[in-house]
Amino acid sequence: MLNIVLFGPPGSGKGTQAEKIIDKYKLVHLSTGDMLRAEIAAATTLGLEAKTLMDKGELVPDAVVIGMIENKLAGNKTAGGFVFDGFPRTVKQAEALDALLEKHKAPIKVVLSIKVGEEELTRRILARGATSGRADDQNETIVKNRVVEYRTKTEPLANYYTAQGKLKDITGEKPVDEVFASLCHEIDKVNSNKGLTPSVP
Ligand code: AP5
Image (cartoon, rainbow, N blue to C red; front, side, top):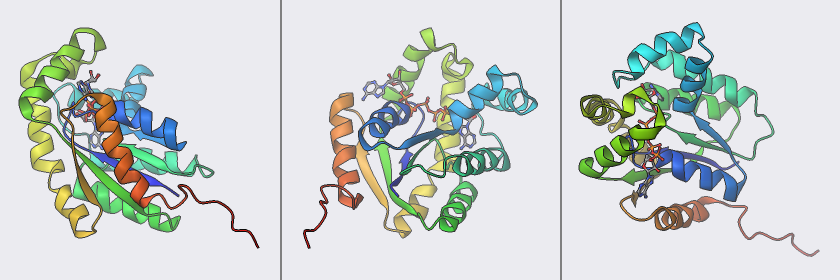
C-alpha cells in the first residue's frame, strides 16, 4: 500500500499536487480541508462549529479531524493507498494516523514537504480568494494567521517525520509540472510496485 503525506504551509500546492498524484498512482485523496468544507456546505453541526474556526484561520480540534480520517480509512478498504493532504497538522494527529495505519500494517511510506516562502504563499492565496469563495482566502490578516498556525502547530511535525527517516523537502516555488516531477521522483524511490514484472518460473 502506498501511503503518502503531503506536508506544507497553506498555499504551498498540496491540493494541486494531490490531484496529480492520485491520478498517476491510482490512490485515494484524503483532504481534511475538503471534508470540512463539505460539512459546512451540508450545514451539519460539525460543519457549523468548524466554520467559526476556519474563517479565523485556526485549526479545528484534533478529535474532529482524526474521527473523519478514521471513517474514510474504514470506508476505503480496497484502496491501493492514500494521499493525505492537510492532515496530519499536529503531533497528536500524526500519532493517531500512525496508530490507525499500524492496524492495517500499511505505514506512511514518505512525507513530502513542499517549501514555499511566505510572500509567495500570501500572493497565491489572496489571488485565489478573488474567485474561491473561501472566507479564509480573502483577508491578509486571516491568511497570516493560517501561516502562524502552521509555523507553531504543524511545522514541529517535520521533526517527528525526520526522526522516522520519512521527510523529503521539495522546492515548491516552481511551475506546477516541475514540482510534480520532483514529487514523483521521491515517490518512485519508495514505491515498491513500480516497474516490477512477474518473474518467469
Ligand atoms: P485546508 O483546506 O487544508 O487549507 P490549507 O492547508 O490552508 O491549504 P490550501 O488549500 O490553502 O493550500 P494548498 O497547500 O492545498 O495549495 P493549493 O494547491 O490549494 O485547510 C483549511 C482549514 O481547515 C484550516 O485552516 C483549518 O481551519 C481546517 N483544517 C483542515 N485540516 C485540518 C486538520 N488536519 N486539523 C485541524 N484543522 C484543519 O494551491 C493554492 C493556490 O496556489 C491555488 O490557487 C493554486 O492554483 C496555486 N498554485 C499551486 N501550485 C502552484 C505553483 N507551483 N505555482 C503557482 N501557483 C500555484
